[in-house]
Image (cartoon, rainbow, N blue to C red; front, side, top):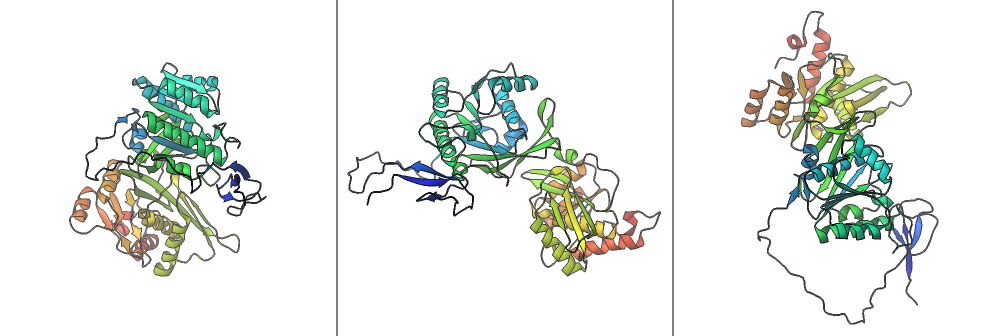
Length: 472
């Protein structure tokens, strides 16, 4: 029986099928199977020519530090681990219109002004459109090589002749190679083009930055193998209704994956935000019920954000649980602990939770701040305006200390906060933290609820929150 010369690949998930079908069995999408030719494989009986043997080295061998190219944009260099690494490939994803092209054009402009040879290849816009954006950003005088092309072969030929230090491809979904019959943007084309560009980066020592589209779920479109090919995967996040943007590393072979870079979008492009805490707390008014300031960490950087909660009677039979900027499963756990360990009932009540400014929190240290905001809304009593809250809640209702409390407290003190509501670390760590800011010790979640309830029952018209229940 002759071997098949082709197979069918789903353009949505990359699953390989032996024959064509209208619906992919793996992801369930319709009309996404495209035929691809199989490579001619050597049979087992064919004699192979002896190739070059691989060279092995010891793990303890000394290697020089990786040469880096600093862009001069501190927030971008922070996320990449100190600058772009020669011979590396980066994949940058983000929602349409979020500012990916603007950011990378600013990066290439700064690198070109520093004397490096840069190239910007656009597959979505014409050279005139990119030139107008560069003029608006004040980069028209920077010596960046610009081209508009979607065919991979002319792009590689031009790069091999010009030999740039940094190359930006905007975007990988628009490229196509004539070696495949599939349309641009399909799984096969994206995989093949990304592989060729990554090979070019490793062979020549140039840094290649690929821009990728994202799907409805917020994932970079195309096969997951592309994310394995590249050395770093960066996501450019943010809400279009807000002025700030966040660059976050999800994979980085040459640096940390927990750092973020904060930018502010303006008429002149993206500008760095040196103190994101002040930006996220900007416009915060007088103390109101249902609001708590959380002292969090993003990598090595402490960030203060406001968590807002609203508990209201349910209009329909099934109560709603709406979350923006936090994990909905984490909210369900906090509500269950409040109900089981503290006696706070949420039956027949809607719960809405929002992280102000469109910021997204990923660490469990926000548990106590969320519980404090919810309790403040339930009892309709504001928390102390000069207090920050952080701590992890266990299923038993205990509040656990979190890492790097000193960095969180220093950031809060710098912004004018006077105390912290948290679990005090044991030993010297707790003594050092108390020297930075007075701390209101919360050992278990019922301690917090009793303080909020006491404030709601005993606060008079002339009393302050400090006099009632929140003495440090």
